[in-house]
Image 1 (tube, rainbow, N blue to C red):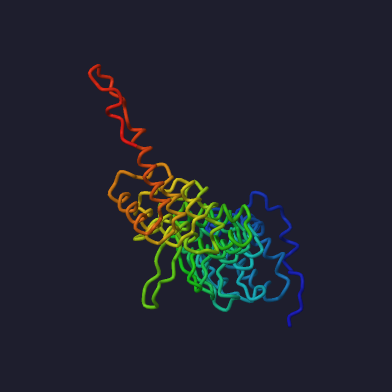
Image 2 (cartoon, rainbow, N blue to C red):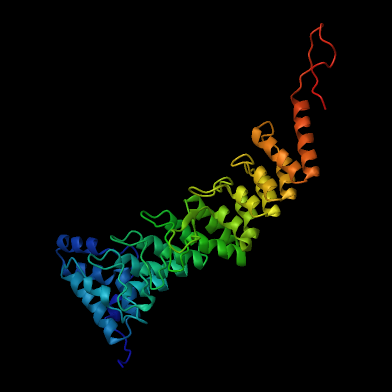
Length: 385
């Protein structure tokens, strides 16, 4: 085991780093413009990222790594790819992963500027996670923003469990990181992890189990950005269905407490179930979830799409049918309403059939306009009731 010793260079890097250059390309260009070698060495010794690395270099291996970075920079090398593979920097992490985990901003800022550095490197590292994975899982939003500027950054990289950085940010409830990643170019908003769940599904589960303000923010961010859920296929040989968060919450009894939360969100479309899917209201009716139906109706769900009233009667959910019949906006002058009323009579739902008749009569009365002609027999045009 190598004994930890203080770096021999430490005394020479105690210069103030305020205003110092922290970019590899900028320093390489500076080398060609400065005629005074000492001035250039001072500039290198003042690089905030290198200064922090030297402070952390307490083993011979770490010192050698920093010395090599310093040498390549001072001699004008335009690449330092070797630093990508220094997995023994600390705890099985590369320098970049270590800096991302520790939120060492100045180090990350410097390293992402190093030409040739492999920002997505995971070989030999813990959990096969990139620096972006670690920063996202730990909630270091400023580090995430820096890493997203790195050339070649893979925003959808997978760790050994198939999780992307967005999966981890949602799992560990880092709302600010989710907001940044959701807007990143090329982000796989609905990527599936090994557990066949999207980031939104993870967030919905968190919202159900132990709701926090962060959970609401995350769900609203993902929904607003176009986040969806994958519904397991009914048969093994079928493909998963893409559905909305509200649809998913409606068809899963464990998530019914989340339905009201979702309907209160500005960006949630209460009538959207997913591509080739019925509405959330239709599915709530189909499954006999009266309380959910009431929540959706109060939230403004359209009771005429796919006309769930007939379905409620056909399935014997008289109480749900009553909720729909008394909902403002229901089309009651259509053939479908008459069919539903006739079916209610056939099935012996006399109270429901009577209610439907009363609603029709009330509607007719509201539409009646008295005739004002002097030749008209009083009330001759009033609807029968």
